[in-house]
Image 1: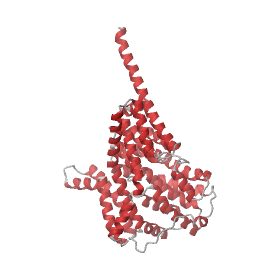
Image 2: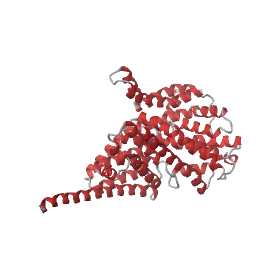
Image 3: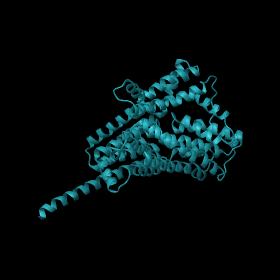
Length: 462
């Protein structure tokens, strides 16, 4: 009798020790990433690689298997996400260098009054932010913000906060930005559905954290007049020939429309029909982005009267800037695969099930913690997605997409002194560290909290 009872007890003790070791491995891996990025200032690619190594060693993985696991995860992620990031960079560069971005900005501004300026800035930032990375969008929009604020004698924050909010919320929630793409890839959820729901979440969030918060905080934080910042703003290039406003907007929206075609086909058409095959093909993210870039080469390139050599230079010039981003995303994929193959994922799943934690809440909390610790929204998104991926298996498509958005929402929380974006905004707007915390950091936190509340609301309805 005693022997029959001792066997299950010993097995339970063994499982407990095993689970504890795996949890310790996850904590050690994340701690290494946080310390190397925040304290040692090591590049996130190397930090993620060393964090994955630490996780695997503590979890007891053979070193040969660990190397194979990391490289497999890196290669798959770069293949799935890296190509989309590169194509998005090409589209953004075409839009910028052809003068299409300037055309969009100036056309919208001509139809705007002083009262509607903050709302116009959100609209402009949202349009330009679709294919562009956050830092590129900031550099592009800062001259516009400074010029508009100076001409209309408006407070810088009333114009600037809406623009930053529009850029940042898209960076966190809407593909083809690297973080959302990596979350979609790690969780194996529908990209078109995630994109559509991301836009739905982004609209009310950008309104609250943009025009509403901007008007509130502009009265409480005094900044130098915009005329004093004109010398700090990057010079805007004059484009003698530009594509039309409608051509530029069409190129911005085309990848979104094409990716949504796949979701429409899944919902409305039978799989064996010709219509489904066509929509499914052109809605595949890589195909949608490739088609958009090829069409943009003709539409934007012809509008700007680029020669073939100029077009080649524009396309080639877009790639060096995103090499580091692709490597970071790839290393995040390697870290995620190490979590899976070491068994850490299953342990986290069991713990979450035992604690009755929703995947939405767990994903948001993990992303918040890593974002605050490392300062990187992309690292936070990739790491959190890798941890909660098992919890998404079996969820309805809309719920899986909302988990991806919840992780992206958490990755925006409280940008502070360990985030490059914090210093970029501080310098361009001529603020002190304290003022940047009251404005930019508060805006980022508001984006995260409001978007998560909206996501929870949609989850309750869908």
